[in-house]
Image (cartoon, rainbow, N blue to C red; front, side):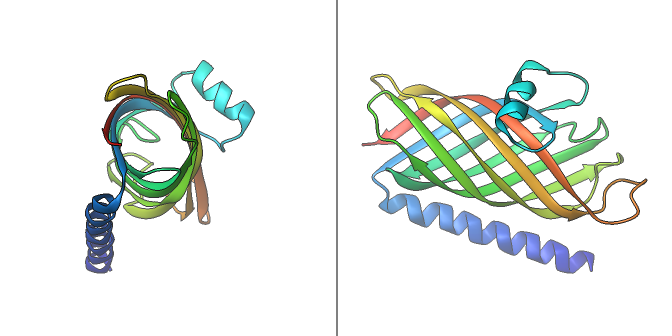
Length: 191
């Protein structure tokens, strides 16, 4: 069973890598965002998003990563991130997403929405360890791109990891939901 999961994870990662290398070659615009942020358990809503940003506490865990975006109004983005204390202090997580991104093409401020699928791999000795699972994410943000190739990005997303047995006290499968709020530096390439 472990070999099958490992093979599926590697196959999905290879397919996503090939997709991310082929699609941008045809895209008119590309960007790379280095970001840092927080994760907090809960579902994404307007109230929860505001609370996640204002109430950073012991149930909040840090995340760092990079996003590669391509396309104009309709495009895609691919995220690779790491959390050193995911769910609890003894769990580490690697996160990969491929998303559809729709953004307004205003000259300086570009709001966008995004949704997609990905994988989250956890390891360690904590109660948050569940191996590799598929995850759905959705959200949006704003890019601030003044004249030149460097700008800022603010992003908020909801993640849902369906049917995960990670809690030692749980008697059945459950869905894990968490919110990610991040801030990053964006480097723009192309048009």
